[in-house]
Length: 463
Image (cartoon, rainbow, N blue to C red):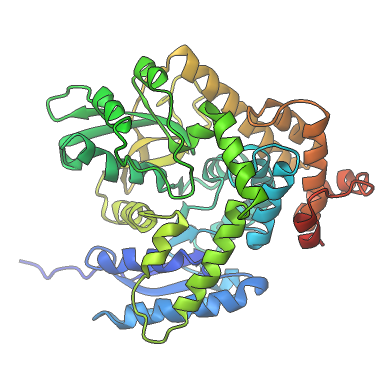
């Protein structure tokens, strides 16, 4: 018998390492150390996030120090130093920090439109700020760690993945989201089953997918879970989405379980009203998250804290580490695990082109994501899906080219933005508010200098 081959020690890099989500990620690696032998973790952030990076980084090191394993946590503002010879790179950054998200939410709400991080006007502008940076990152990876895998959690995750696949030569990427994990963790119990007894099949786009469920006899049990939804069962709605019920007759007709974010489309009137009420009283979700983040960072500074605090679960990122770390383990150990990811379609959803990014059930192993065929959708779901994908394609192209007209097209296509003068007004205010992070649109923004931001708080945050 030959001697056992020692596993390669892994270098993990997290861009946006000062995020308050990072302890969740550290916990995931600690739980899986036997299959992911990490030796060093590099947490990377920008100068504006340095204080957060140091607070989060010290907690991350204490978490590792409380284990039997010697893992060094490095903190840096130098992304290229961190990327050198990395094995896995995770991304969870927010261009413009939470102040940018507050603008994304408050400016649309000030005109009676939905303000939300990944949907509607705010989601479009988050993509415009994020895509140029993710393309810089993959170019650096090509030079510094060409064999690494990029695991993207940065929202809007689907559009970010789309931009990488369409506008770069980098292919070692999967986009992740905790929403499918939440559904698979919570739904089985509603029909007195275990996850291991069920087969899940997802298809669609990030924050815009549907799924069906089969039992271990191959029987479709989707309708049973739909029934459970209307018995007030917890079926994994993310903490950041108001629990407005879907319309039962609609779900029964399509016999698919929609993503929690579909509420913004299927119950647009009610979700908009809830959002406006918060905007006018306690503040938007971004403002609430900022308060929560302040409380978390205060907890993180306790020198005796060595574990993830419970408050983090209210941040909306439950099971984030399970998604990220399980995907990394599946890639590293060639596990061929069923995970829902954003990846190249390659025929899994025939209603969309093969070369676009979709969020689908995949087998994840050393070859990357192998999509599982879902088949054609019915006309209602197909119509939604094709509209949303083509809206995303306009946004991705605009982010790369700086084409103002394409952003306007995306605004007019988006179902959460009523067409007309108000849509353009909101778009122009968002351009002014985010001009520091949109250099490709400089010429267009220079023509908008007479546009004033209506919302006083967003106006005060703008530079």
